[in-house]
Image 1 (cartoon, rainbow, N blue to C red):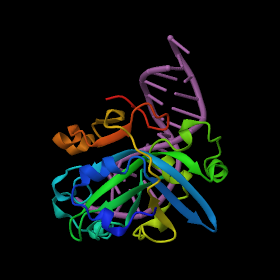
Image 2 (image 1 turned 90 degrees about the vertical axis):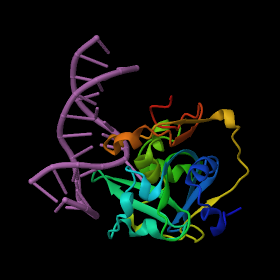
Image 3 (image 1 turned 90 degrees about the horizontal axis):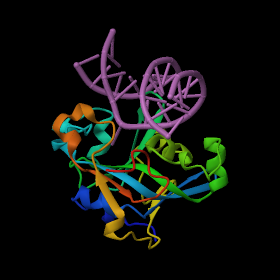
Image 4 (image 1 turned 30 degrees about the vertical axis):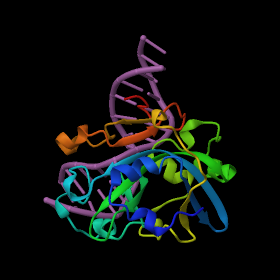
Length: 201
DNA sequence: CGTCGGATTATCT
DNA sequence: GATAATCCGACGT
């Protein structure tokens, strides 16, 4: 069930960004397990992607996480408020990553409701990368964690979306990346209510 | 329903 | 000192 480390060493981040749709992201914090089905992702294409923190091979204290072998988490603070969770993929020194933008609550919904202070029936509880991370209790202490470990991991529950159900479009909030902002590297499940807006191409 | 702008801080220049 | 892979409450329609 738990995805092996070898899963993340695939060097095709565009494939993995789509393949992660339907996989289930778990966290365990102080004995509290929460999990959500991944329904929206974005691919960040390493050193060649102007929207990537590792564009041009940039290495800083923050981006060093991205240069790990695939299968670790990359969590950073955005706009001073929001924690964004990424899956580092590919091999060591090839800094590809997949941003998890939305999840569908799957386990521990009551805990998510407390963390988000809203009912799980509301799509906003885990729609958008900042909200999804908060629902799962992810903060910067989850940076550089082994995704085959016991604090945060991803399982395959055989949830499969037909290719017709997987939509693609430009990534969100990356206008600064110029021509790379137009690349259709955002993937989401058609019609799923937890997908963040805009949920059309 | 849609649009607008303030929040809040690690990180980089 | 400026920026940022965003969110949410306030307001107008």
